[in-house]
Amino acid sequence: MECGSSQGDVSDAVSKLKQETGDNILVYGSSTLVHTLMQHDLIDEYRLIVYPLILGEGERLFKDGAQKIDLEPMSATTTQKGVTLITYRKK
Image 1 (cartoon, one colour):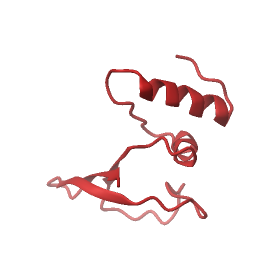
Image 2: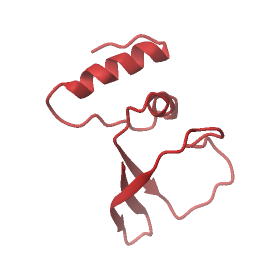
Image 3: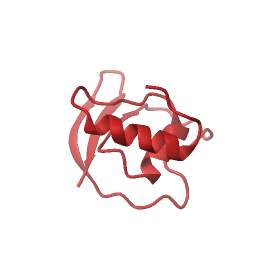
Image 4: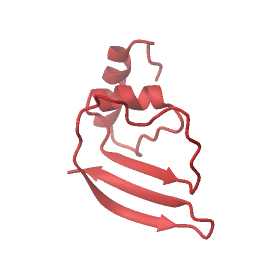
């Protein structure tokens, strides 16, 4: 499915995809898309990968002024290298 470039087109397309049967919709590495989906309440589950490294710079996942979203933890796993994989879902 092709999506237009505006937020409305993306949110409409994802809303339609969510109503279809099939696998989960996953987003990798697109904070712009994630922010759009968050604004339109289209994310059911957050899968975060936390690395044991502080860069001190870079793009933030959750921007200032973002609406509060109550989450509950579903699972957490830490690898031998200290990378933590955490899954949350909306309450």
